[in-house]
Image 1 (cartoon, rainbow, N blue to C red):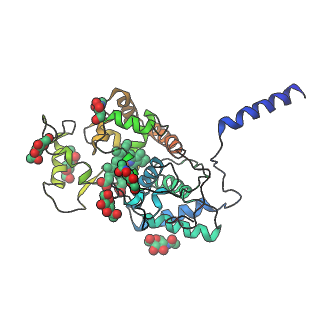
Image 2: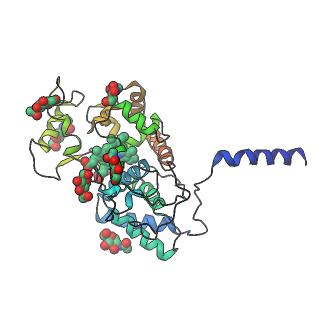
Length: 318
Ligand code: HEM
Ligand SMILES: *[C@@H]1O[C@H](CO)[C@@H](O)[C@H](O)[C@H]1NC(C)=O
Ligand SMILES: *[C@@H]1O[C@H](CO)[C@@H](O)[C@H](O)[C@H]1NC(C)=O
Ligand SMILES: *[C@@H]1O[C@H](CO)[C@@H](O)[C@H](O)[C@H]1NC(C)=O
Ligand SMILES: *[C@@H]1O[C@H](CO)[C@@H](O)[C@H](O)[C@H]1NC(C)=O
Ligand SMILES: *[C@@H]1O[C@H](CO)[C@@H](O)[C@H](O)[C@H]1NC(C)=O
Ligand SMILES: *[C@@H]1O[C@H](CO)[C@@H](O)[C@H](O)[C@H]1NC(C)=O
């Protein structure tokens, strides 16, 4: 064998086990070339009818990937014997599942049994970010759908009361780094939170402080007006950002100003491991966009399921 050929063979042999090439940007090029345009059109239409759709779909992708990997376990409905993830504790605002169902119905008629529900969420999450003014990236595809979804596993999601160490550990468990944590938390540039997710910061916060001292005083007053003591409006809450339907770096500027809605947002500014990254994203939106895009690709690789199925309906296993 000529030395050059031999060299190439050796490189290939080494490269195959290392790259574990499960996902691929061109995965559906031959089997369903129109897949991404079908998903995009569905998301664009749905977002025009309901402005809450983009934030909900972005959050859906995060929750899906953090529990059992990106396997569409969040889409499965509860069954008589099993309470599913979507009915677990923070189910109050993960909604808009109908949009994924619509995309799936169209994909099943265009290319039956081909596009997984997990890939639909991943592409949809990219689309809602891009259509809100954020970055665009190539979504790697080829995920398979899982067959298991368990409500109480959602306790493994990070909580809005988590401190920086807990957040870093939660992301590290999924193979994500400190930069991924800060960049992906920028997802809070979109959407809304109910009072229950931040109310504990507003009164009787600790034995030393009535109100969370990391909260800007005027902003704390505003939050308290929106969530008065013993309020009964279950829809009450606060937009996460002053431009909650535009994807931008405003979130980081607000965190620096003490206007992060969750303790977990504010914690990123209180720890030297993350503070400098918050500052760099607040200064440079282009940097935030490119880091957000690469962190979303990494989030999309978490626990990818090679051996599952392609569901026919996203709400039920085949
Ligand atoms: C770092 C840990 C995180 C925590 C503790 C957290 C927590 C929360 C909480 C408590 C809510 C509000 C739920 C409600 O009361 O309605 C929320 C909303 C949201 N989160 Fe996160 N989150 C985190 C990371 C992320 C990531 C990584 C993304 C996406 C990249 C994301 C995207 C969103 C979006 C878009 C909303 C608004 C949802 C809507 O308007 O319906 N979050 N998050
Ligand atoms: C657009 O969205 C609306 C509201 O969800 C839905 O009723 C309609 O069927 C959608 N149209 C298309 C072409 O997807
Ligand atoms: C949401 O989760 C709570 C707490 O686990 C549960 O009591 C409630 O039934 C769930 N809500 C829905 C709509 O499933
Ligand atoms: C979760 O639910 C399963 C059964 O559904 C139960 O065996 C397990 O103890 C529960 N775990 C927690 C932490 O509640
Ligand atoms: C974060 O919370 C954990 C668990 O409650 C605690 O042990 C730790 O000291 C806290 N770390 C920081 C940086 O506050
Ligand atoms: C405030 O919290 C403490 C425990 O941290 C509790 O004992 C007390 O009852 C709370 N006060 C009110 C008014 O809720
Ligand atoms: C509080 O709310 C008012 C009225 O919506 C707004 O003009 C002001 O900027 C808010 N203050 C802070 C600190 O967010």
